[in-house]
Length: 339
Ligand SMILES: [Zn+2]
Ligand SMILES: [Zn+2]
Image (cartoon, rainbow, N blue to C red; front, top):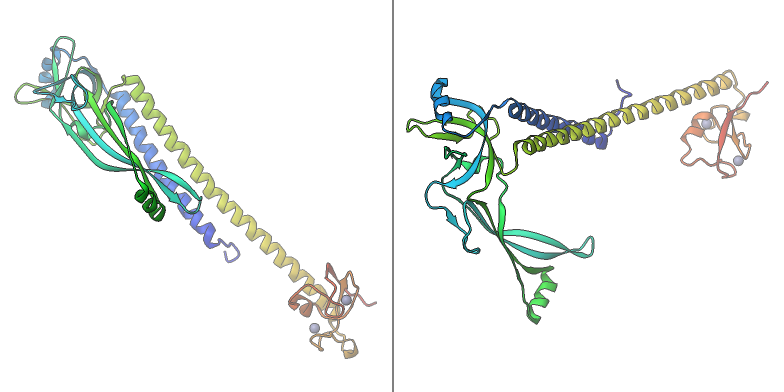
């Protein structure tokens, strides 16, 4: 339809709202699958009978199970360099610089952080059940989680002299200092895990990222919190998809409304022109000719001044809505009927 007109800005908003809505809907569906998987996953008790159970399972593999246990390093655990007597199996050392950057638009200093150095290390570990049964956790860094505990945090304040102040003024950046943190998954912490459980050839139970692409979870919270957290994320994606879909619908409605108004105005102008043409027909008396084109009969009364000086097409072509005779503004124009 030729009259249905969408401007560039509308088209960009419409296109991006459709794209975002689609993306968030995709993320929502994905999250729903994860929640369904978690709901369907059997909860295995970590004890000595588990080896027998897996031995009897075809392929000695359970595709997606939930299992709980306490973290224990298989060999030597990692030792915290900052806190005496703290041992863990995953360690993350982070050095961040905190600085103030001058924002010339807001005319104020803004906080910025950037990572100077980051190191993640891990040692092989297992989850241990009540009666000493163990499940070795493979590739823990590929899992979603676990939440690490901050065992050390120290802020090193920056000191500066006069020269530094000058360079800060010139560069628009000043360092506040450096934040040193150490996070750890400590030995002895309870973990809820969801993943693929296998009984390896060495008769050891192992948990690994699911081969069917489901999410591998290691979390220090309980199963219920894990499930609720995932459901919360799903409804968040759902709401975002809905909001962007509504924006798209609003743009289409707005463009439709504008096109309707445009057609209406065009139709009204057409009606008026016909009316004036009808009046003009048959009048050959050029004494009464329009002062602008000097050919058509004068067909309209300009209000409020009341001058009858031009034809309707010349009135429409006026650069400004002012009377060509007296320059008064035209508020309304009415057809001139001569009886
Ligand atoms: Zn004219
Ligand atoms: Zn006038």
